[in-house]
Image (cartoon, rainbow, N blue to C red; front, side, top):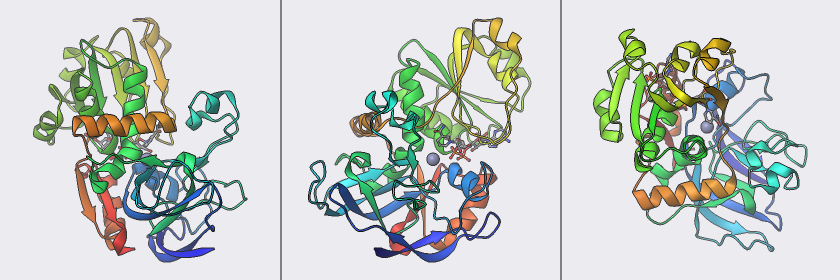
Length: 346
Ligand code: NAP
Ligand code: ZN
């Protein structure tokens, strides 16, 4: 076992604090990663606070990991010591079910192993990236292309792939009208990626406070959802809407913004249900869908796409001591646009 420094939540209500956690010895197929940066995703907050169900504590979250390979197992072929690599929201899956074989490990029929708070193959509970090192099986480690700095690359491992995958799946590109609800961590990546794919992009934010940023990030239009006129002016407009909001919103009001055959894809994961009126869908042959992160091959494709288009996250780098403060700012929608922890401070 390797004992490494980490920050973990002691309970659903306690502040995260410095501690140590155990990492397994590097097995034949494992890679030891010297973590350089870890992004703070709203899912970290939902999880440690028990929004999605009870957890085992202490729990170190973090699934936007960027670092450098420090050691490889004897059978590892995909990575070498010194490689710049990333780990996202999952660290294993069965590898045998239909979905895993299709490269959609995030939808593993036997349940993928989450990067933290998940039962690992050896029966232990996984601990995430708010730490100095992590040991991961090589197939769940992706390459960070040379053109991307590790700090701005870290959030791509969750916020990037979670928006890239539905944009690709629902065909965002030239001639498509795409809206992104919520300009936070996921939302700002959705705007950058949809713009790079050639779509016309609209931000639907609670207010116009971040309008200048939204347009700079690649949006063509920006509307405040606090203004009721937004919903009448934009009715029937969008081919695709990506909802990144972490809280429950009136989804029926947004479904009215879809064009004929349009799809509203929920990536935001509030603990509350989002009740849908059937007439919101049948009135325009509309779809209401969901999407979870992306497969490993698609995550690599997303990183290569980002390097090619010069896309990284907009970040605020913080020391570990500021994690709890950062959580409060994320909860207050005061994030521009991802907090990234400098792992040298764990
Ligand atoms: P975030 O940085 O906090 O962004 C969420 C944004 O939603 C906020 O910045 C805010 O944008 C808007 N918002 C927040 N509360 C709102 C409210 N009450 N009403 C309307 N708008 C509100 O969070 P994130 O890290 O991007 O994560 C967003 C959600 O996606 C979380 O629920 C997270 O768990 C989930 N998630 C899902 C997946 C997946 O695989 N499906 C992966 C990662 C994360 P404005 O200020 O612009 O309105
Ligand atoms: Zn995440």
